[in-house]
Image (tube, rainbow, N blue to C red; front, side, top):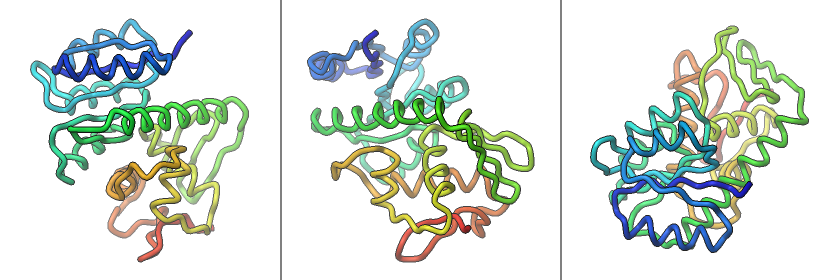
Length: 231
């Protein structure tokens, strides 16, 4: 079955342009005009990736993303006419995996889509073969089932957040700069990314696993270099 991608945007022209590019790459494309339509499609269709606009009538992208993340870990790329850092942070904080500001280059968006799909496929393959559980103090990371627990209480991470945590936890003591984290987790060798993208995901992880995110016990900052988890 071909990979199915859902485009959620109230702008018909944008949906049509993306449909052409994605169809030419062999993807099967579904469209929705707002968040309500998107949720209805996700109830009945196996979608592998979602392109989700922020500013839409009825149910906007932020609220839709929250509701999607309650049930699904499907990769989500947010779109918005706003390019400010605060808007990017808001989009990523809802559980989105990546953010692209309008107007955008369709080829750049296509590259990001392919990177997200590669990452999702690699994670699925690893889940089928890796049986290991990583234990760091009270933090338990189940690689097989992609679950994380603190003091035996399971917490919810997005696919990107889990991949970042897994990367650091499987390389204890190694310092990863932002560029290296991006290329390892997103599986993307292009330069189409913002440092804020990685930093927001790190912040989100800390808020979920750390008792005090400002004094992290697990993900340490090596100032001027990057991030690590101690041996």
